[in-house]
Length: 83
Image (cartoon, rainbow, N blue to C red; front, side, top):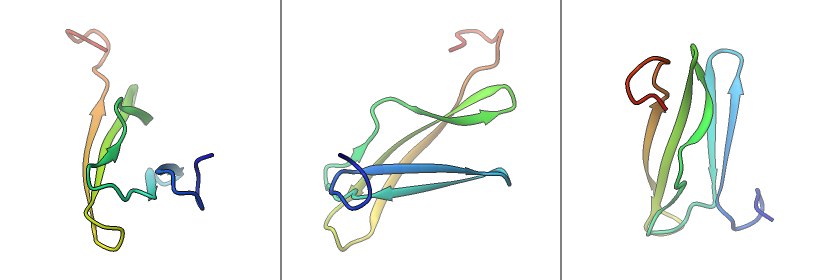
């Protein structure tokens, strides 16, 4: 079972009513990087879906982390090659 208190990587996203999101990363301690393979839908901006893609790198458990991330916005309806 994954979650806080285990050694399994976990990302918790919580939306706040003031147009704010808090991302909490737990147990990301792999030098090869840990992250998602498919973008995660995390919300909306207007009528477009907002997605998040990430990878976290760590040399050791006690050093700082490197976060590579990308925010993706669904193309507007009617745009060429819309998702």
